[in-house]
Length: 529
Image (cartoon, rainbow, N blue to C red):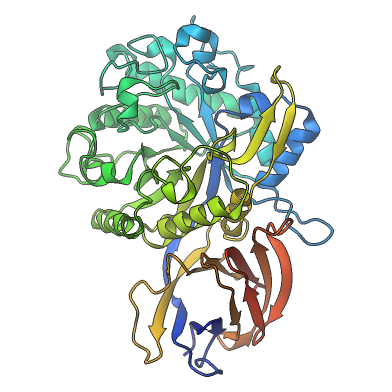
């Protein structure tokens, strides 16, 4: 059975690799098939919105602590990771609501942003300094991939003169004669930040949630709706601008607010629905982007509002994967946090440092990767307030110049993936069998129990992530990979204080490992010779 890895469970989880299980056959056996690769993983990430504009100007030692938590791949003197090793950082390019102040109709200064572009058409590269400081801190800690995203075009180009939509309808808040100007602005920002800060934006998203019904009426934050035709027109013009300037930055579509908008119409009309087909089926002549330079065959979507009930958590992602496969399109889950429909953990209000939210989000990560085939998984805000939208909680002083922060089990739970599954890793097939060796469809995912996914990194190391959602402890033992005995480092995240990617033990093949109730573990092998 070369090329197979076996795991089994009967009150415990047993992993035997090559030649079957050397212990009595349990009721459930997982088989990790190293010769059946699935998607190649890209990046795990989060965004700087909206907190870094202030926190990026705090005392340097506090910035360094935050940057270590988010980006570091180093260990402390005890071998414990200093951070979760995010491999992509999202930069929110501002539209200019900060300069407008209260006239922006965005009440909170936290949700306004500065704009590099000035009213006279010149650029001020001193703007967005706090966010740019974190671009540099990320790069210093090994992050090499950066994505720029916009919630609105610059206010000078919008139809209502604002960065928020204010109920003007579901079309792009962009003047008809400003599409080319907007494309030039985006190219100028990519070139300008690289010239000023040495940071290259590898990816840019010209629209964010253009299909979101909230964008039509105008919430109290920057945002703009757009139809598929308006998105396609913008992307084509930006592609032309990039080609003329010999720029290789990739243009991403569509940052969909809901997976259902990618598949059909959902709380919208035909002009904003059926996005996979619209952008990547050649029959969609007006909106087809499959042959446009600098546009990868890739859809970006957000995991909001599709997480409950549990049957739909799986079903919606299977449906999404089927549609993506039909048109040969890859997928990134590029933004999510906890919302009001996430009733199992009390909705979005109230920051939660515990495993309650961490496990809930880990289950979403597992489903997005395993069922939707996501190649990248990105959280919304790196730092937030008293809401379940930040990996880190900020407590900012009244003058905004200083404050304190605290980490969360959510941040470290994401680290069970981001720290160890590195860009270029290949996800491996995981199958489950009963005692009679009958295949159990979807048996790698017990939504209230154990969920297992496995990967092989480019350096030859194997990674296995196990989520134990149950209240009961489990155990497993490890045998061989391709006939070789392997040593595994076990990292654990749990509600125990300090167990944040804690290296709890090293285990050789054949030994037993404990999985506490309500915990997440990652097993990392040494590269095989």
